[in-house]
Image (cartoon, rainbow, N blue to C red):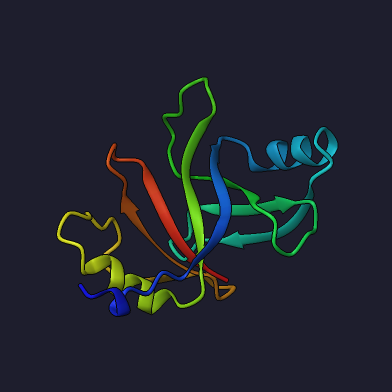
Length: 135
């Protein structure tokens, strides 16, 4: 790959995803104890997973994403599911990532949520999940 072909659309860490058992209880905790504001609730297109995004209402801040319905077998400790990187052009970033021989894609295509957010996941070197995310 030539240097001029590299398209790095990443701007910032967009959010950190936390898997929770009880979305309502978790939203209440983050609002009451940490004074975070509920910025968006989004049902996943799979009809099972529910998402909630919380922050301090700054447009360029890193948010907390609460994820309910991902797994019924959660450990007693908190489970960080992934971190997300904001990109300007999800299609170009997907093509750039696919050009690497040593990157394992988790998603075989870009996912679009009902509110228009778009994303895909890859594995990091230790099998951590990394999400590329466009609002």
